[in-house]
Image (spheres, rainbow, N blue to C red):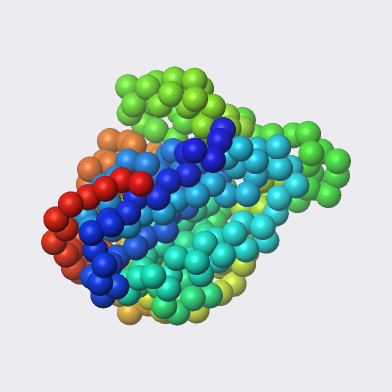
Length: 280
């Protein structure tokens, strides 16, 4: 995997800050910005400048996966947010899986976020494909096992649609743009981030949209519902899907997901007319 899968989509013809809308996207655990590209293209076409970068231990830094921690991820996300936020009057954060948890984390620590879109939020590993051995994590994490054991990716790859699943599996295998397992150290980082997020949910006051599948193979709707019940946002919306698994941006209800996101963000940051679009 390389940094080339990081992406920025910019509207160069919008010079007035009050008309500029930006959004920072975060990919999932052991994934990459590749899985956010179609989502990013959709948001770009709807007037947003879009930014998505590989988390530490991902991208071409995969060799670091055993040494990075949740602190590294949080520092990385905050640094990117600080760098970008000052350039926009309206700025959103959104993510999938680990990325959704990170988006909520940023909402707990930054009061100037216009809105949060959390997709398949993963605070608990309790989906229908999670092996029973997950209950042994507290013991394994305190032994040398944490450096050698990995949770394998399940056969469905988080996608219910069989045709899409096979197609995406071929692309990811050929391009080497994601991992096919979850290193124990990485899972530990996710769970520690989850603890931080759950502890501070009441600090989130900005509008938030959570979309989650009823049949998520990695994380049940419990994660999203905990977020919805814990935040202090006056504007909050929860949408539960019936015909998708974890990768909601690629599954049977992908068009519905993107249109739901568009409706939510348009209410908060109405679309401005864009004369010419240029992808950078």
